Amino acid sequence: MNESARRTALVLVTLLVPAALVASWASSAGRRLRAGASSAAASSVAVASVSDDAFCTPQLKAVVRRVAGACGLLQGGGAGRGCQPMEAKKVASLTGGDFNAMFRPLAKRAHIIQFDADKTDLDADALALVDKAWADQRGASFFFVVSRASTDGSEERNEVLSRDRAKAVVAHLTERFHDPDLEKQVGLLWLGDQFAQLGDEFCGWSRSRTAECTGKDINRSAFIAWIDCAI
Image (cartoon, rainbow, N blue to C red):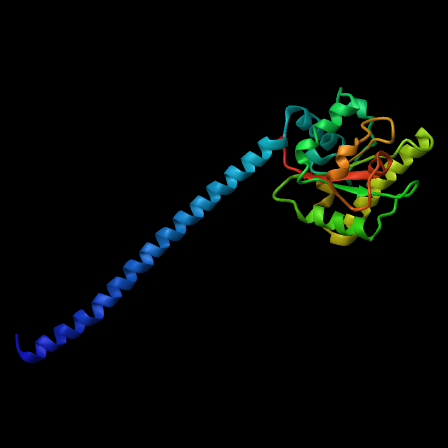
């Protein structure tokens, strides 16, 4: 091989080696990215499964199914949400204490919106907490609003208060977010004052008010949470 040919061969080798190295690095990086994506997906599924198992007891699933069915959520919403007021005894054959106990595993996910006595409007802190709760969907299917009234006043008046507190939450969500899927996701259950009064322990949950909390305060409220139960 003459001198000119040797120089040409040397130039070709000099060019080909870096190209081969770059191709190898790119292939290796692609494998790492694909492996990382698979690992992240598996981790996400695992977390979702653990989350579901943490609070989706058979009793809670039964309540979710009944409320979602009555509100038309399981049929895709239909003409409006179709949510009907329901007596608690038609939702589950439970005492008030047992009903509330089902929601205890949601302590770090649910929020309690508080109202003034004989009022149904949301104050500024309540509006902010509703927005925060709605944004924290985490892939869940149903947003539940379970409202109550304290035992002050007549049973009839407290049922109206409870109903209008639930509706105030939904009205704000509708106006604030204009979400076309909202009608298919929100379920309401208002309990008046005759069933499932909350105990003082719920004063330690995420609330729209930071002032000292009494039994009457905590029951002038709407319990709100995304619930990701496979029903």
